[in-house]
Image (tube, rainbow, N blue to C red; front, side, top):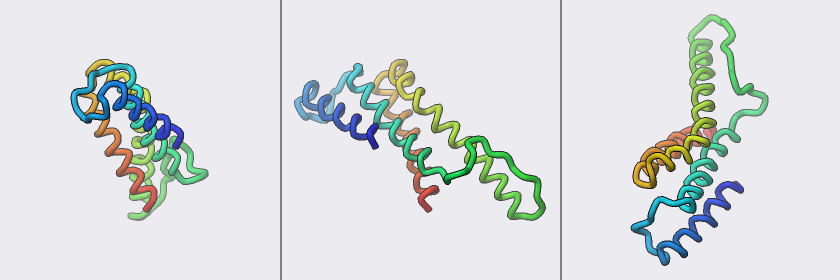
Length: 125
């Protein structure tokens, strides 16, 4: 939640100092890039924070019989891949912003946020 609070403060400052509270024509700069880092990083951290207590980060399937065991192994595998992706998306956000600027980062980082949102919905369910 602190990441979201910091990101919101930076976003307000960005709109005030650079855009005079307008919503268009922002340049790619450190202030806007920092907002992206905290905003999208917060979404990834929230979904990681909703993991079940006691479940290891890297999960292995126990060999069992039956259809339910196959689905549990599949869910463990998907959960591990998803968690690794969320962890990697946090440092990837400033790299994407630095390399692609605001124009490219808005679509790529929004995809990171969309995946985190889907993960949040799943874990809350």
